[in-house]
Amino acid sequence: GENVEQHPSTLSVQEGDSAVIKCTYSDSASNYFPWYKQELGKRPQLIIDIRSNVGEKKDQRIAVTLNKTAKHFSLHITETQPEDSAVYFCAAVITGGGNKLTFGTGTQLKVEL
Amino acid sequence: DAGVTQSPTHLIKTRGQQVTLRCSPKSGHDTVSWYQQALGQGPQFIFQYYEEEERQRGNFPDRFSGHQFPNYSSELNVNALLLGDSALYLCASSIDRRSGANVLTFGAGSRLTVL
Image (cartoon, rainbow over all chains, first blue to last red; front, side, top):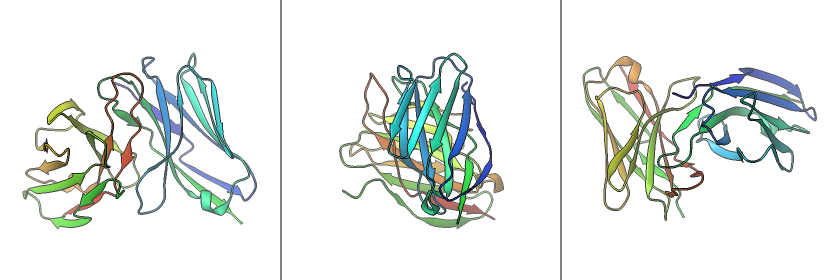
């Protein structure tokens, strides 16, 4: 089955700096890659996603890139703010008839003042 | 729109007992998936229900079972509880689309503690 690795497990940045979280997946059939933000004690919230026919997608301070050949995808957060502090999860999906998400192990992002 | 609602929010059980968790999907959604999130880990897929049938299943033992009702709500049942079943159980709903990705909406979860 699909396996998703995520790095780093913890990331500490200064406010205003950029943060990058990287994921790799194993199944080349995966074609949809969402990113979730989970604040302490709260539900995962979708923040951005990318489909396999696109190499990059941006939404304000958040961007995601996908390299299908290398089976890598990354989350980029620019101009980080304290409210960006949370656990971020990447996931990989093989769409069609189910759409099971295989999650990475998460990255604890801390934005320091 | 209340989104995805789950009950109970917290519960404590002892080893060997049975538990039932409930989920109401977001209005308009017809597919319900269940995930187990152990402390400090990413969610792990348990199974998915569509049209009142289990459509996909993850690597979980038969002690984990579920049901979907005609109104699309769902239950997760766990029998013979083990200490390792302690986790946050997340329900996620979506609209079934045979082509393209289904965006999931998660509930707040049910926190199960097994003593």
